[in-house]
Image (cartoon, rainbow, N blue to C red; front, side):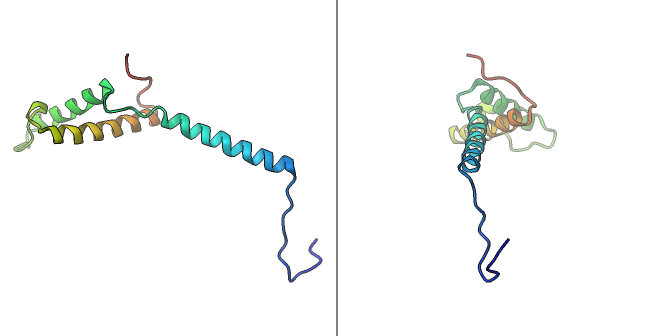
Length: 104
């Protein structure tokens, strides 16, 4: 009960409450780190395969008048495509649409 209505009520926490809160925060951080550790890198062979397949789809489109095949892209365009493919693969891994890690 607040004996002084003009003062804000302060919640008191026990050491056990603080330890539990820290433990929970640590577990959440570990879960986030675990998710991030599954992020593929651009040298993951799945990333290259995904980038090439995406470019091939664009190249084969009946509405395509400007998209070259993978080998027709500049080095910078290939790098940009690899970064996009890495992000899409990462999203697919997180969504559970793809499982596992790159073959060694």
